[in-house]
Image (tube, rainbow, N blue to C red):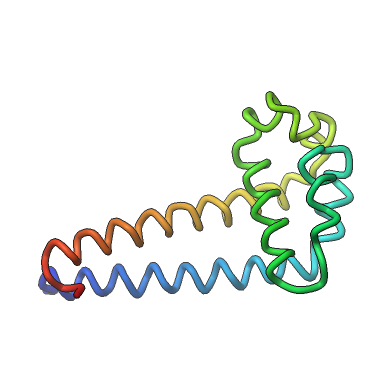
Length: 128
């Protein structure tokens, strides 16, 4: 049905679509749910240290969301190092935690997929 090159470019387009969905979801979290996120993690050391850096622009808000995403996705390591407060993690709303973890994990996998696709495309001669 599709040859290898067409399948490759379908995966590339799917990966970029995933990236646009990630950016849209991050904008939603950054401007509509950020106060809730920060109030739920108010005792966590990592959030307290980075809160002063956060402004109204999307880049510093994305930075804060990446920090929160890594805290919630890799919570065992964050709890062990003291960056995440155990009470904050337990009281964090479950649906919001799942959405943040899903978004963060999808972004990580999308980034890995992009590098894999670049390597395959370079090896096959489809990417210059």
